Image (tube, rainbow, N blue to C red; front, side, top):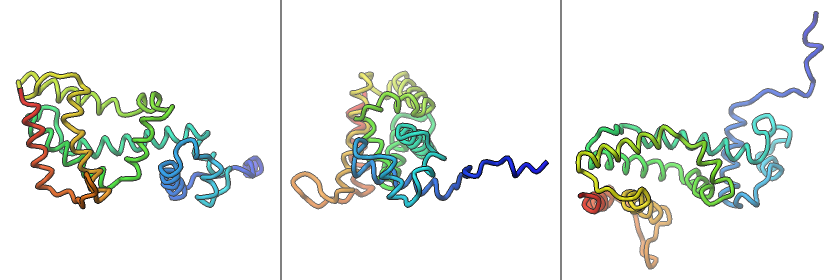
Length: 206
């Protein structure tokens, strides 16, 4: 039997390089136009592929967005946890976190902007469910260990995050915009980041 006679002529195979290019184009379009202004048709035109090609990789627009979220969430988790151990002393562990998070944000501004938009979209709940449970568990263990050793004051998680990480992300944003408060020129240095971290550690100390 000649099995080739039974193959569907319209069947197409996945192309990893093409899929990567499509995903990168999707990041750019979503960050520029928002989720409401983004469509599969517009993406196909921008990526210079047929609409049918997109459906080899994604079921529909929401599937594409959530796939991007899952993929980027994993990349961010792996980068953030590099060299990190939840049993580390609090000051050492937070320093590793700051360095890893800063590096990731500065290297991947487009993806960070995408994830930030996702937090404020109608897909926020679904996105939260597929983000790394492993990351949340490790961060939770780190905080609990630090509180038990009396290295960290016990506060609500929202307060902890606002003190522990918001200053870093504000500095990163100033750096990316090249300006800070009042339009002053700004460039983030390792020295300034460590000085800020020292103030954060002081604020979180019991």
